[in-house]
Length: 553
Image (cartoon, rainbow, N blue to C red; front, side, top):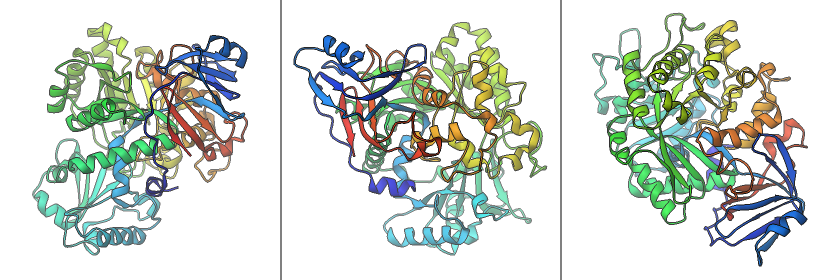
């Protein structure tokens, strides 16, 4: 289902009621134990604070439950630990409903119609915004142009974000306001697409997006709160009791704390400060914060970028692109510049999480980690990560395990990218791409996410992709490079216990065990009994955080 449809159709998240000790009984329950092994249970009990007291049989749990605990009869429904998305963009998810929907159109013409309709329906907006376009789906063999966008929006600046968030398609008005001319040089880590005469075509890749972004008006307080409200409601509906927000600033931090203070943060947020610039300098004054408001919020990581994305050919490759031999993609920073950013965060005690998609990007970051962890061996305890780890040389994959670097990966990226990934990198490099089984086999823990709103925030769709290597329509038959699929237990673990581990929260969340928070979901089908093809169709009926019901279908 389209993200915008989901956002508009979702049921409202329930207000957080006061905690009360309870026994959840008559459940078809599954969890992982401390060793990561799958175990079954029929009951669990939690105290007034929302901490689990016992998990097991109804009789054993009843014996340990506090006197007067309420009994919640699950009537045999499946109960699972709350699911955790290890890489998403919370405010971006909330903004989807207030932008032109370009995720759905299958052609350029249909996309232009969607922009025109959105522009007409929102005459009060100074800028026309959209999200989700993908020229690969449109089969253009090229990027769209400003002239094409001008045909439907000429009176106001228009900015359409590519599905991967690493390129924007803008109209001539936006280029004019940004001061982009034929003489404007490509900024570091970015590219202005140009025609044969050197004129900007309307596509700005990675670092070049800042040319327009710097003149975009900041969201109002009401818009920011509306986006957060929408994202929280949708995450609760999807069964996400935790999400790692990959890149926030001072504005987002203030709202997360405010929502946590007032009982409105219905998904636990583990946030990463975006870059080590001004926002980091302000937010890091008190050092890393691992837990705020009973673990509802944490701010102890930093998000950096090494390169761009594969679809826009911004991902940095060691050898040229197989389908565009004139380019290697883009490294955002020289080695010494990237090393300095990582060292600044690491010295301040933060977990360092770096976006790296291409094999050159991954190699650069692995080299930097090797140098820094040799210099600061105690910093290994922060469990540093590479976000995406999408295309990695076979020689570099073992270095993740050797250095203790967590690959934070998104299963649905593989099933979405199958239509272009091998064209981009060829038949040899694809062997180290989306290589989940290879990482798991060597003993790496994978933290799974979706990169929402780039992909659907539904973690069950992610588990489906991890197990089948197929998209939601079951394509391709037999699975895309099925040898790199996960087992069901592995996929369940990477969206629960290992995602928690990647945030250093595995003693608090990620499984249903005594002492942990009572974060759990109730579903309409048994994840471990339905056919693999139907995993993504499972519906979440209830979502509970710390013993509070925050969503009910």
